[in-house]
Image 1 (spheres, rainbow, N blue to C red):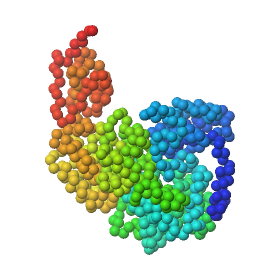
Image 2: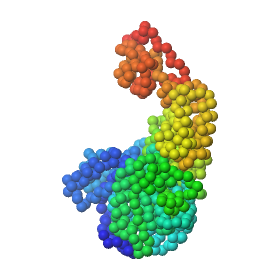
Image 3: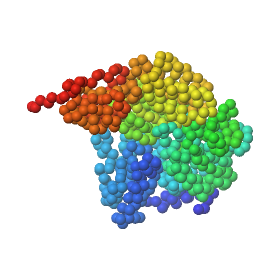
Image 4: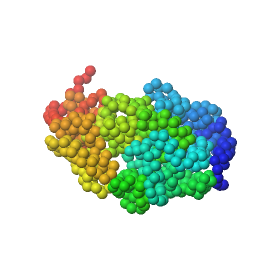
Length: 639
């Protein structure tokens, strides 16, 4: 492949690529992100290829495997271009009917998305409320690009921003454009991207390094993974522009080992970019050299912290180090190093192409641009959501997410990963931005958003996140290593009925110490789940401690199951399904739970027919005594 030596050659190649493509030719695109892989998109793709061949339509209908479309709840997702007809939950056995419908310009109604509110079938992808209520400036191209084919990225204007930066702008001009855009780092801290670049550029010492953080260890978060899998060239282009502005000639992409598809696709993208001369020596004849290496992380959550990540790249154990000297001054091998996450780098080409004023016009004051969130948990439409910063939680959860399933009530949304905070219902109309989330006791993090309903115990939720953080602490500093473990122990005692007066105050004291004295952000933010749940749900802590009661019936040690003799119809369903044989009964005999055998799994409660509702959950009060043998006989009166 001849290398591109100028922006003119890049534009010529783009026009040649577009000329070879018929925009009116039918194309079946399949979401091939990790989520749809799990749904079986590989088999769906094979079925489409076989069916096209079987119907003699090779050359008449194209197939393209794209990156993640975001609507992970409905995979495998298939979109038919050029009309953008969207089919959800597609299976291999649907291939024949879909191919036939494309051939005949018809629509397969049964595979269309059905709006749960109106019952209406929606034909086109961008009219589905999940998509219609978003603004997908970064994530949108995913659905049009085969991440393993650089020509798809070039056809959409890819690498035009890099060409502009290298041939029409000085490094100082690029830096100033990013500063004027007010882009803040999407990795969690929200620090000014331009100021971080400037600090690295101005730091003494050579060489300088630029780094992509694709570690993303938050449970339920996968924004960076989806971008790296689906549009790796956008990240490479942003990284190269940043390197030019900073004066760096070497970059690293740190990817979790648990992201094999992201590793594969970015590796292919790097090789393709090098073949076209978009990475390497003398890019676009500008005299600027830049090379990129991929470093696979070992899976440690703490390695998402900047200094720990850099230590891991050096080949050492991924542990943080004190930042009395910033990594912008001494990072990898003591060289000035600039680290941003995947989403931050992917914004850069948009800023260079469209201008700082355009970017600054999106979002809210001091919080410009869009942000991708991973919307998961107790919400109808789970997936990846991109909205302008400043959008309300209510809009995301209800207009995009479709509300809470099963008619349940919303309780909290946890943002910012395991070190984030829990935000209750009264703040649903709060704008989502870096500053507002901090005021509420939470944080942006990389964009994780876990929705919880009324059946959630907030004490157990805090315990769950502290358990994760206790395992993931590297152990280097005492406040984090010992403090998290001690807080976890207190939370476990509260959930298991061993709590005592003063535990709340002790938790608060420990939380403040760990927050103020830990070496890195893992320990510094670890108390957030405790502090926010205490701030908004203190009454639940008191119920656990003072009454030994779990209001949500989640904590097993505080919950018992009892069969109401007045409602039991001796249907024997609970008896047959009890995994420990803890239920005694028979035909015509009221059932009884043997508390000594009961493991409090809740199976009996879940399967008791709604028409009876005989199984009762009890917390904070003694279990009523069982009826006598004589009272257990059910006398049925014939009507």
